[in-house]
Image 1 (spheres, one colour):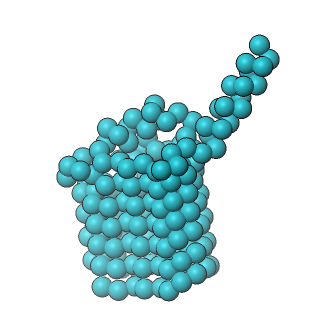
Image 2: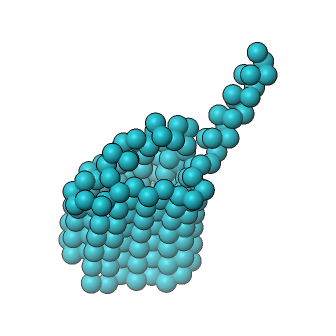
Length: 175
């Protein structure tokens, strides 16, 4: 019995340490909602995470991704027409690759990323028509590569980046 308990403990720990070395691609709300059941104990995704709806208006929230605390590759959030914020990624502390947030028409802020401390690659935020604030990035301290903020027509300031101390590459704010 002790051996079985130890084995379960070790295997449980291994699954919590890392999963999905090839990453995961979410194209629908049902895929996001099924994540906790499909990948129980998955808190550290080793590969990239892509959130890009295949049917306009299909992805409306990321709540079921709340167990994720790190992503080894990039996080790519693109072309989600009714996603208002990034809530559900509240426990995410590190991204090993780029954080790319592009063309999310209803995205008004980046709330949901309050626990994010570091980005191993670049930060690229662009063409989010309703984005009024970068709030949500309040604990971000370092970006290993470049930072680009562009064509976010409703964005009036860079408030929310108050704790950012390091950008390893170039900084571009335009359009």
